[in-house]
Amino acid sequence: MSKLPILTGLQIIKRLKKNGFIIIRQKGSHVFLKHKNDSRTTIVPIHKSQDIDRALLRKILNDTELSFEDFSK
Image (tube, rainbow, N blue to C red; front, top):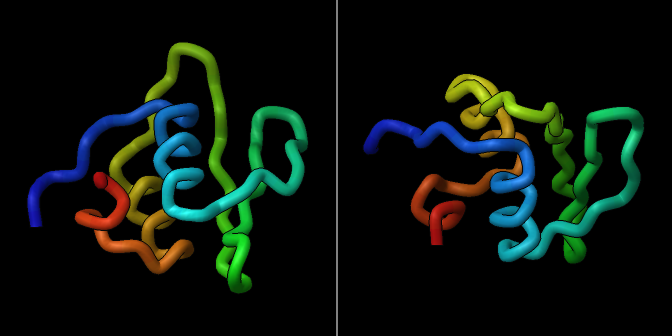
């Protein structure tokens, strides 16, 4: 597996939407997303001028049960 990229919260949300996730709600700077066909959910923080750490991106991928290859398409 290649090294995970450094992305912003908005970039992660855009890629998750392409994989079938929809925004349920937003509380402050945290966006709650759910897959439209099943019960996979995750939370993505959106902080201006801050990137998402690779460890948090790995956690989001585990929550959504997406592989890096599916996520990066």
